[in-house]
Image (cartoon, rainbow, N blue to C red; front, side):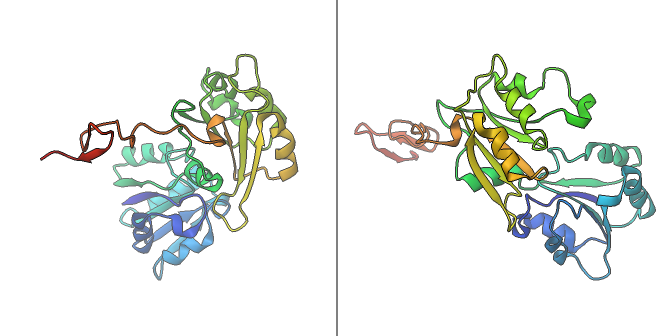
Length: 262
C-alpha cells in the first residue's frame, strides 16, 4: 500500500492520528525535508527506510515505489496533499501499475493561517467563499486561462494565495487590477511558516502588501490572505440565532429555542 499522507502545516502535533499511524507502520517513508519538520519522523518504527524527496525527481520517487511492491510506503506531503501536493501524477502511476494506494488528508496551511490570525474566513454578508490560488510564475504554462489572481480578485471573496511571495509587486498589482473588488485598504495578512516555532504574522492591507512582503524577506512557505473577512467585528450568524429553526432546534414564541421535538 502506498499512503499519500498530509503532514499538516508544520507543527509536528498537527498530523492526523491516521497519518501518525501510517508512519508507525511504514517500511518506507519519502518526505520533503524542506517542507516537513524532521520531528514527524519520530513516529516511524525501527528499520524504516527514509528517503528525502528534496533531492529527488518524480522518476526517482516512482523508482522507489517500483522497487518495493509489497512494502507499506508513506509519501509524506506538507499541508494537505490535495492542494499543490503534486500527487495526481503519482496516483496515475499507481492506477497504471495496479498498486493499492490511499490519501490521508492533512491540516491545510490555509486553516493554520486562519488560526494564526484568529479569524474565521467566511463571515456572513462579508465573504462566504474562499479562493485558493497562486501567481503563474515559472510554471505559467500550468495555469488555465481565467485563473489569474486579478481575475479572482473581481469576486471580492477571501483569497488564500500560495507560492507567490517572491514577486510582491506583481502580486499587489494583480490584486488591485482594473475590475478588482479589493482596494488599497482591503485587509491582508502575511503568514510565514504557519505553526512552526519561527512563525511570523504580519497584518497589513493590499496597498501595503508589496512593501511588507519585502520587509519580511521570506520567499517560501509564505501564505497571503486577502479580504474583508480578516478584520473587524462580524455580523451574527443565523445558525445559532434564537429565531432560526432547523432540524435539531425549533424556535419558541418568546424568541428562545427548545430542543428537537420528540
